[in-house]
Image (cartoon, rainbow, N blue to C red; front, side, top):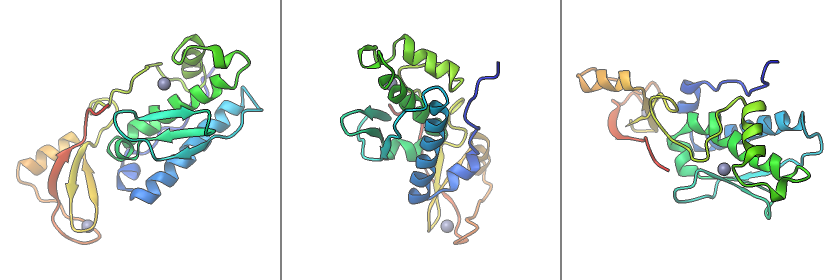
Length: 184
Ligand SMILES: [Zn+2]
Ligand SMILES: [Zn+2]
């Protein structure tokens, strides 16, 4: 049987989104993850999604508030990892909590691990490892006059070697700012 996973997000599209568009896209991704969960649990209530989590945590299922919280800073810096893993991870908590024996289940216990594998086709990991080599192919942040741009390792290497890149919108040269990997 084919595991009904979420579609793979497009890294270049994600990297180019501004803050509002990114949050909108994350909302939509959460909705997709929720619709997938509804295939096994049709009565699953739809969780709200907030971008108000700070510190080291990437995400949190908040049953009292009735939704999922995400860390906007880590989301902006680890877009692909959030879309691929963090959002389904939190939705799996949400789903397990709403199963009959869910509230008694351990947070990353057997039920949660099963949902991660069987529903989202993901290796269940309790912590998020934001690693450039696997999770975020474009972790190098560059700036022009109008926004952030994210470069892959290869593109970053050719910029370091002297190749100039320009923003298509404001036409300014892109200047290296920082590398956004390995937080949390
Ligand atoms: Zn978790
Ligand atoms: Zn620009």
